[in-house]
Image 1: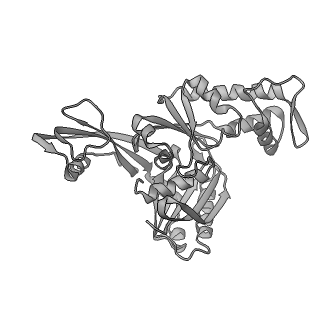
Image 2 (image 1 turned 180 degrees about the vertical axis):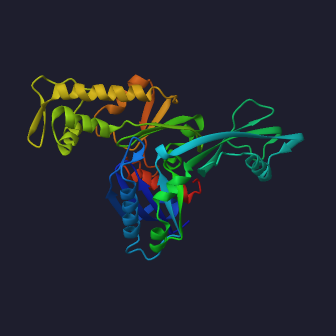
Image 3 (image 1 turned 180 degrees about the horizontal axis):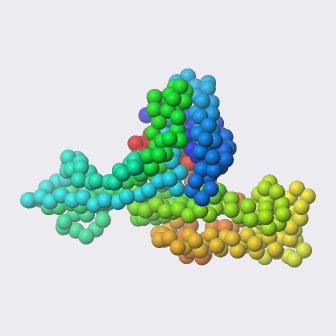
Length: 360
């Protein structure tokens, strides 16, 4: 597709970002407008001020269309992982004789799938894998394959219906959009992982400022999605309290520290005129990284874990600590075209490409 305009709205624990981008050949993206505003945020899986979130979204939506010649029909809103739930279902078909599976058969499998929509809205669904009557192997695609029976295991991502109350349709339509549609951040970000890795099964861990989500992936879908309320923001808060410094100083100290390195007794970290003994600070941070890894280790994960969100990347060696404790290979998500690691830039790009390819 050439010169498609796609509009996305992203939010995490601290900020709301709106972007309208042009998609050229080869899925190259050209951002036309990007609006970023901080808000009161999310803690313990709750909005600290729901009205402030809605007002911030409205301000971002209104501002992001300024100077754009054409406003896309749909605004795609990325739902944070802690507000999504995964369901899985199994459906099957049997044939009297060997039959080649066609698209009508696949649709029949979907027709037999009944996800629970009580007080929730399905925002994404995906076939995870298929099994044929003649084989035990798991197959990602069976179109055109001859069999006497096929089973499909599928998954769906749902969001609570009440989530709609946070978004003001009038403001969105006044900005020029016809409607908005929810997409899952997890369903978008998994496309930053190479296809071969996804087909073999892997885990995507997203680290937001105050929360962490754990998504198990197979192919183009999620088999499980969980989260726990722990992130680098809690570590920053503890630094503020334990070392009696302000927020900005705590962030600077965290960026300097090297918890996996041995330091001399006399070495110090300095920020805004405040000096902290490096060995003491390193041990403090290392203890908290160990606590995070122990929490992560409570979840069932694949042998290969991909990290997104970027909130622990400021701490030198953090992923190595997690990898050693969890005994997993841990890889940082990268943009599929540029290879860059930057958040929320990578997530915005993943959202746009996911919408473009109709995966969401």
